[in-house]
Picture (spheres, rainbow over the protein chains, first blue to last red):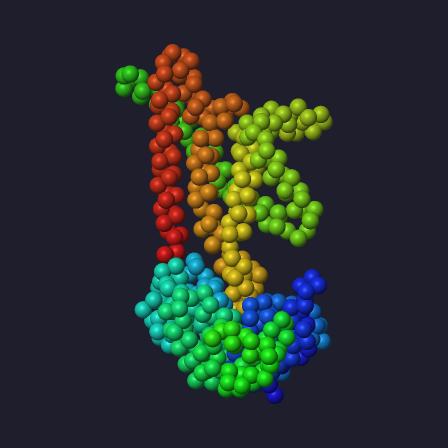
Length: 247
Length: 219
């Protein structure tokens, strides 16, 4: 069974349909890139998965449990359990500016999971090592570059041991020369078989790292295929137009 | 201007300074938490509460503090029937007036501080699994405090000087003793002494606040 299963998802603001009957699945260990023009609903779709957006109708199932079934949400406690399986990395990092890097990593597992501080410390230093920021553990976010902030944000999400990592345009707020270091961390995670859903404008990343690319436009999934197919041989006119515009 | 004279007027004025500082401390200690509660009430989803507190803040900020003090100290006892029960000690009544007034200002300052916090902070907290209480106490409030700090500092300097309004409700404090000495001795010196004492207090306060601000720099 797929790890994430979305069926007939509908979401509208006022009368505007932002997401129209979206259905897709994400398999365990799969890396899915969602691409498409601004305003196509890709971020809204991603945010719906962790209940940052409330959908109007449809079903979202994560690891066998329904977050929302035919438009009816699970109980708050269940919602919490289901969304806890997912970590999220935001475009603007959303690090806690009043906490050091290390505290940013350790606060959630400490408060939410009541983990012992000894374990926490081991895991946070291991993860900072992994994102190559071991030397910045005691720095405040204000002292970090954008690329460093985003790597801290990834480590912070990993501290909660998520089964799925969601990325909402993780490199869009970065200077071009800083995107590489973040994409490298993401590529490493993909190599370790982390299940990832990535909303991105980085076509190179989608091409090289993703197992599957979903192209969205105007609230619909237009095409979903392997990167090779999407980039070399798109079937739909809108996909062609979008990729043509980019080159 | 002899030192003997200054020494002579200084003694009662320093006693008055104690009253000034006591009022200052009481107002800070009570009006900051009360102001924060008012902020929460304004943001409450229960509309009547939000509306009442809005009106309260409007009245407190829209009328002179002096009028409010006169109202509480001299006005309330004049009310028919219940007036007799509202004769408070003048210092206590003045404290009450100050706290009620400053709480309204602090409420607005904190509201501004909350508005300055990015939505993304709430979203990150939600995705990481924090409950509402944890989000408020561990994520939002520390940042709100940081944003509000310079304005709170400014307001507390204003408070030091506003304590002199006690003069108008006949609570003997620093300015009262200065004025008494001027009336008695026909000299301008006590005014200078009072000014220096106020300056020393605000200087010390400024230094303390700067230190607190540096501590909460998060850099």
